[in-house]
Image 1 (cartoon, rainbow, N blue to C red):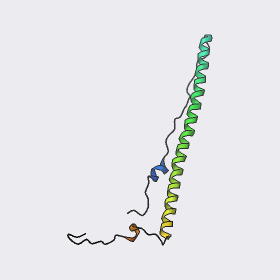
Image 2 (cartoon, rainbow, N blue to C red):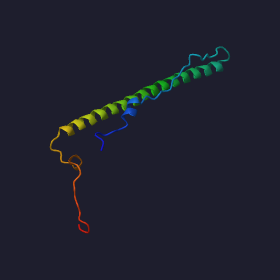
Image 3 (cartoon, rainbow, N blue to C red):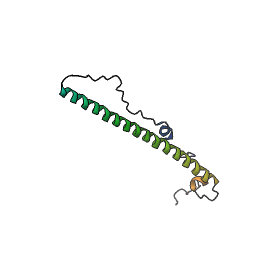
Image 4 (cartoon, helix red, strand yellow):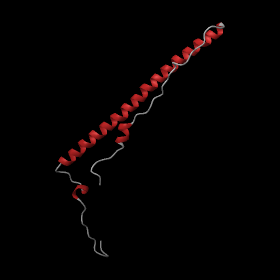
Length: 111
């Protein structure tokens, strides 16, 4: 029997998903032309802004998931250690596991 509960805390501690990124530094929007074209350029700029907001929110969400996972691992390990110490310090524990196996012999043909 293991001496402690063993969860996937290592994976939880290392959880670090890579959020999406957005780089529009190389994008050049044309200028000039018809009035309708300028309206389209404004729509593209608004789309970039909204996409940037979405990516920023996604990055914050990914960080939150990471914090939750790593925090849960820390709590799990802390409570696992506390429980093991409490169990080790308890002298009145009455458990078949801690007492060890019992010898119960049943005679052949008997009960």
